[in-house]
Image (cartoon, rainbow, N blue to C red; front, top):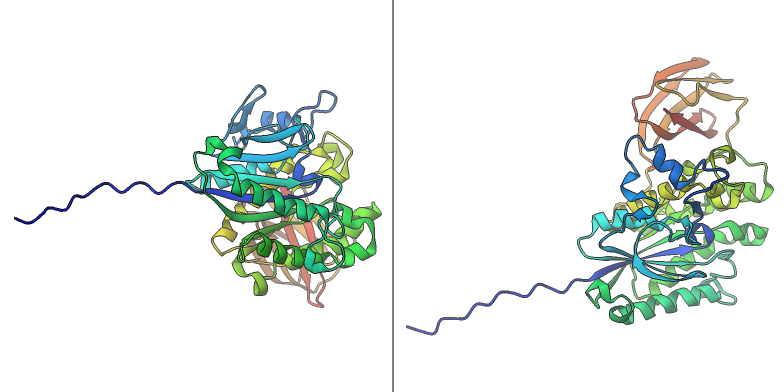
Length: 397
């Protein structure tokens, strides 16, 4: 009888940590307040106390916060560099949260391998100067260079930087960009923002040796959908947000690997928030939870080559004298009245861009319809036959 081959068990392939970059300025750092004794409204503690549906309560409570088992964060902040599992208190300061919290949760659920979130965010930084990419011309921004060098350094020294990950293999999986406030400083910055953002994506893909790196752009949703009285914010609404959308929703160039998140859905007014700080979404913790979750879900779509924009949300500013929605908030039925009898279409859209309901050929001056959706924030889009359109925030209780 011939020799019998010896069959040995295949060794399990070593785990490869999946790294995703969270890049931007102070809102990517995170300014959602955990607690506020003077004004608790809109803090994380307030959100958890009102969480009757159990959407956020899994994070636990003060002094006993959940830590994600397989999702880690690198973030070099002024209070000290974080190299730890994702949990509450990893925003710009220890008493704050940022998008990393829910972004990490979504990616942790998606991947079997460990996840490493690399938060490369610094407050008060513009894309025109501080993050300026090399191919945009002029002087390369120091924080562009810093981002690239830190990502490379961590990748090359993963075993010593994060020994508890149990692997020295790292795959750069994606990039999420949440920035914009400081580019409102000048009209020149605003006008070149779209070009600079395209150069940023191109250059990071090249310099990080990831030519098809999936990315997500979260827009600068300060002020929400209503045109702001603050002139700085109004410039962002009129010029910066459309530029961000044109990049994030450029399916012809980026296909399903380029994603877009409209953070205007998650803007809450001052009276519903702990601080007067429109540049930081009034420090509302719910905003940063929802932005992080939306970015995470869009990143998953980009990872699967399906982050296509279903609709374009950049329309003319709402004209309240022409279109009225009531009651708002509503529990079930909504009435829309308008000054023109030539509406072409009305759409109900959710924060991910999905069209939930649609009505066409509307001739009545006032129409009522039942909302067949869950509680939450939605957008009603109104299109006229002469090509004008407007977007209106709607709250369903």
